[in-house]
Length: 179
Image (tube, rainbow, N blue to C red; front, side, top):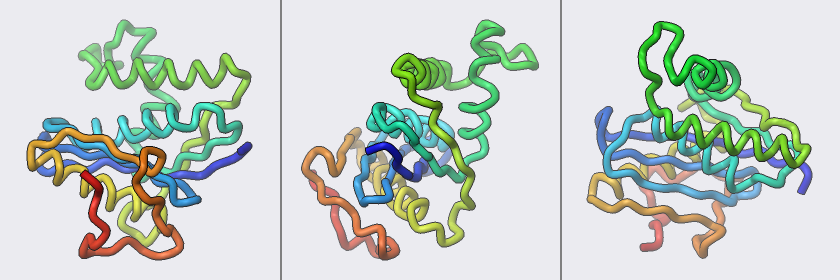
């Protein structure tokens, strides 16, 4: 596959609190995970990281995100943070450094393979964008698992059914995540 479009999202019950992340692809493939304690930004960043890792060989990867924090971190800030010794421009320690370091590794691995950087595209959250709505649904569901004390990761690539992204996600959550 030479090109692929997916959406990412994070969710947090409280902030900080139980956190979820997810990516959902244009073909209905998806992955999601729960973190017992995190922030919304952590969920958003991990969703991007997992999407990059899971699609490391896709030549033209487009990642749609509703978080300008994630887009700006990936496209503008993380290399500057690293150059400054993991300090912000205001000389404060960078939050989520471990995730940013992993994002740099994932990006640099693409470059080493001769692949272009993933293209990050901003979409408005909760505005009817189908893939973003599905990513949000999966991330929120994952945050509920985290709130129940379960740190999990599941995926259509590991036995869960793909999603029919031609329809909107169910508000009632009828399709239960396999345990």
